[in-house]
Amino acid sequence: MDRREPLKIPDQHPMQIFDCPRLTSRERKLKKEIDGYIISEIEGRARLLIDNRTVVVDSSVDLPDSVCDGLTFKRRLVLMDGGMCYLLARWKPDRYMRRSANGQCQKWFIERQCFPSNARRFLAEKAVQSEPAAVLPE
Image 1 (cartoon, rainbow, N blue to C red):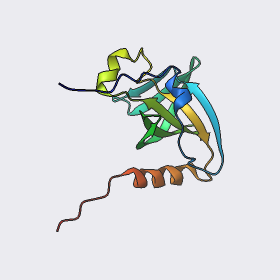
Image 2 (image 1 turned 60 degrees about the vertical axis):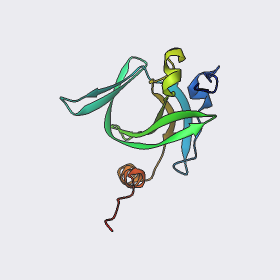
Image 3 (image 1 turned 120 degrees about the vertical axis):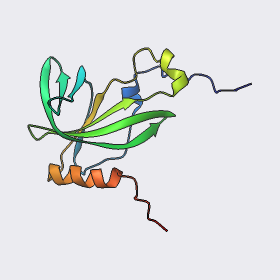
Image 4 (image 1 turned 30 degrees about the vertical axis):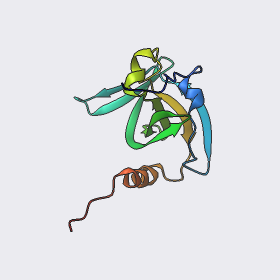
């Protein structure tokens, strides 16, 4: 008989639970829901829908997952066309929790705005850091 721990669906929104170490020396917490994150395979562009506004994503980097209070969060660093740099996150519940998640999962939110001195170089460094180490042949 498979004994699983009881479902741990958060009482509050996962956005309020999420916390991770600082990425830059100057940051501002926003904790703002995104209405939509649209990725167009045809155009090769991504857009964020925030309060009935569309903002174009210039580039993005997926960061390693983060665990807060037993919940797993996906993280993505995005650079907008206007030069703004945001840390996005979303709750990724375990498989057995998805049906009871009440729509709280798979919804991106803006965790914080980052102010790196050189945003393109900052994203390139984070991309290199987040890549798995290459396996060397023996």
